[in-house]
Length: 234
Image (cartoon, rainbow, N blue to C red; front, side):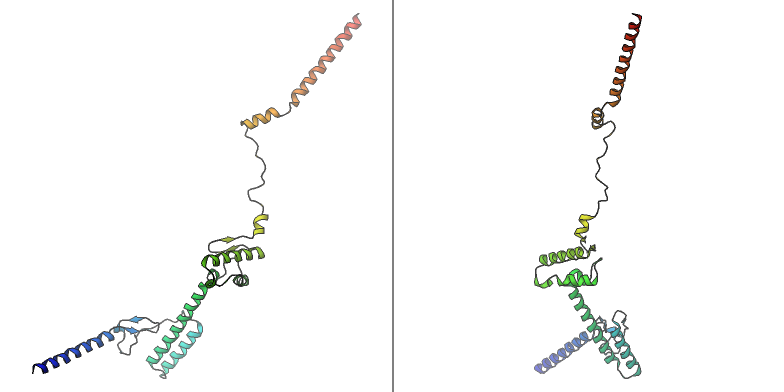
């Protein structure tokens, strides 16, 4: 008798635990077509899908066209809501995977796959052809190869390239461009400086020499006239 009661109690406990497990599983949440999981309260139909809308505006036009076609079939009654949700979710999943793949590939390309300002798409293609694959060399070698190839593009096409961390100027332009600081003419010494005084002292005294010459000539003339007058009187 005691054994029968023990067996019955064990069966009851097991049944309660199984029911609780089912309740927890059902309360885990409801799926959405975008891959999110919402509270189970958003699934009053009990089909595992949340009764919420979605926004396909971020998807490419081809995916939006597929969604519009599926929506038309659902509205006509030829496609169930569950099947509709599953196919829409598959479209979102596929597009998200494509975007992640593109971002991964872009990260392995110079400058994230985008030509920097000043570089055309054709020049960027040429740049990539002269740079090794990112996963074939170490990071320092890869970055140096990008730097060298970018500088070569700048020199070859005589363009200034504004990369995220450096501005590449054509080397021929850097050497030939006249300086904006003006010609390097020597400045005049200050008026009261020692250089100015020295310069004044070193100037030829042309005015003084001319005055001395004039005085000497006048003296000779006066002497000559005085001698002539003395001679006449004698």
